[in-house]
Image 1 (cartoon, rainbow, N blue to C red):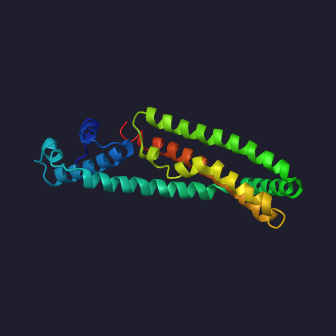
Image 2 (cartoon, rainbow, N blue to C red):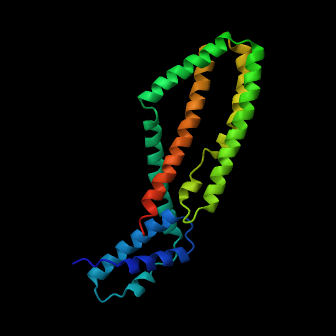
Image 3 (tube, rainbow, N blue to C red):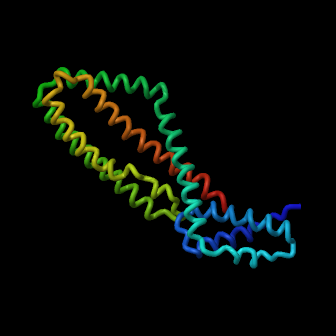
Length: 219
């Protein structure tokens, strides 16, 4: 019969892993699960093996930590991809077509002065919004207990805060060539807006997914 560890045993393993300097809680959970499985298997094969002596054999965590970090990251990557795919549902497709039509109509009918004004206004709003959200994410991640590696899972961060400047520069070319490429420019604006929305929504869903999965694991 397979030996099953008690809640106290699992808590002791977690304290041991935490004491070894493993930073992120989700990685800690995966390592605890791995060690618990090994200990249960070992104590089933050799009942005379003591819990403490088996646990003490787990030293030199670097290799295991890197393996579990990659495992958690792959899991989060799959979730992000799935979230991005599910983002483009039928209601958003309809919204996309409407948004594309509005942007195209504006570019087609507005004069250069109006586009210049819209460029400057949208740049200020976009800059305040991106910096504000980025600061919010940074402070939230730093203040949370049991920090997950989702706080490190924001490769989009630096590109995200540069988005207003990128679009601002892009708009200069729109003013110069919009008569020839009105539809192309409208599609570019529309896709940019949707990608920013999709990335933010997917990241927030990822964060909730990670906390719901891992914070309850050792409770």
